[in-house]
Length: 131
Image 1 (tube, rainbow, N blue to C red):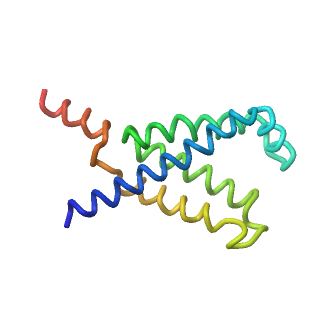
Image 2 (image 1 turned 135 degrees about the vertical axis):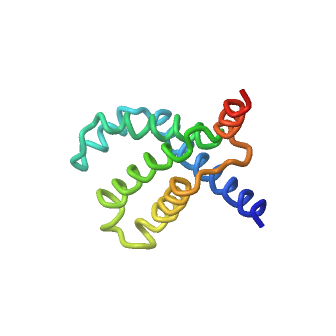
């Protein structure tokens, strides 16, 4: 049973990382200046666009590789809560925050449980305990 749980957790980790990576890359490919302008237009400081984009790109790669999964998932959770309450909530559940709520739930699961299967972070820990 534990093996199936780890496989499920691994799949959640990969999907979470891919989604955030893709969203972050889009922010930079579309021109981070556009994202800065959009952040400012909704009343957020423009520099947060750089922080969010970087968390999404670097964090997405880290989660996919299984490095610092719990910490990065916590950062993802903060970004998602911010997105839900500043942008998505007024649009309602289905047209607004449902997708973000699913990602938030996966991120919180990762904070609580981590993911060891095919994880570079787990491999590094294994090497430390052997030496």
